[in-house]
Amino acid sequence: KNEVEQSPQNLTAQEGEFITINCSYSVGISALHWLQQHPGGGIVSLFMLSSGKKKHGRLIATINIQEKHSSLHITASHPRDSAVYICAVMPLDRGSTLGRLYFGRGTQLTVWP
Amino acid sequence: EAQVTQNPRYLITVTGKKLTVTCSQNMNHEYMSWYRQDPGLGLRQIYYSMNVEVTDKGDVPEGYKVSRKEKRNFPLILESPSPNQTSLYFCASSLSPGGGWNEQFFGPGTRLTVL
Image 1 (tube, rainbow over the protein chains, first blue to last red):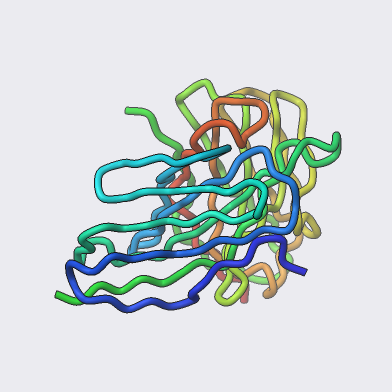
Image 2 (tube, rainbow over the protein chains, first blue to last red):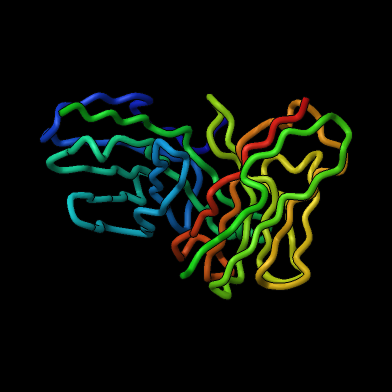
């Protein structure tokens, strides 16, 4: 049973296209993270959300707590955006779960020039 | 420079030979965690620590040990490695004890092969 589901698994786009990656989860959460894993393997945190929407440059992340769903959007995509994007959730503290983190399996994005 | 360091970055070893992967952060973070990443399975949490002397199991703790004797260090110990522990390992740290309310900073990864 996977608490976090991402779609699509793989995504190919042409430079300039608008990209959407989706994340659905089955548990109540205190926060949701979007991570980016570069082709070299390094992982960086893009966003941490508990409600609403955040924007950083061409990246926008939204979350709907009631629907247990988050989206990561990339506007005007560029080949340097090619990476694996990973959604991770921190479940609501039930005493035994504080500090736990559940991950989606990632979305491989390739942007062609 | 704020960072999480892991050593070694690459390791090939044989079954049963005890090894330790070190993780150190210089940001005075309270929360630290170990993850493994496998093709098709994604990232999975091994162990985490909310603070010094406080550690807890993640999804896949079997075959691993950790300790948190000081805030900056969180070593991952494989007492008797087996081939199914061949994986890419990441250490991460975060400011908040909750871990989820602040950005996680990841180390560069350690690629471990157990023959």
